[in-house]
Image (cartoon, rainbow, N blue to C red; front, side):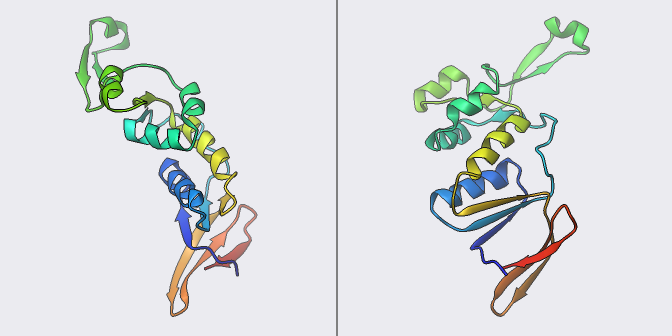
Length: 163
């Protein structure tokens, strides 16, 4: 049975960011992600100023920016795509690039989640105290007197326990 200080179930942006944070402090962490590959769909597309600052501190800002587009984040309302030119923009709470420049060396960025996940996966894989297990599901947790153990199943169907 292997031992980790932290188990992270889910290797999306939040789980990978948690793993990277732990890894930068040398904390032993296991990330169990049931998908073997990142989602091919863009899903979420906006990264906040604070998240970009964190990515910058990990020296990932430029790589993340390379997968996105430069622009201010707004909601665009129109009846159909054909009438998009006559649509209307609405603010959604993110500062513009000019506003962000007043308080930060970076700004919100429009980057699809599939790109961000790929960048974060590669980064997490370089951290010696973190192990990323792709194609692995957490089946059960047991909170016993000696700590918590988890039963995992990998993509071959094999199961293992970690604590």
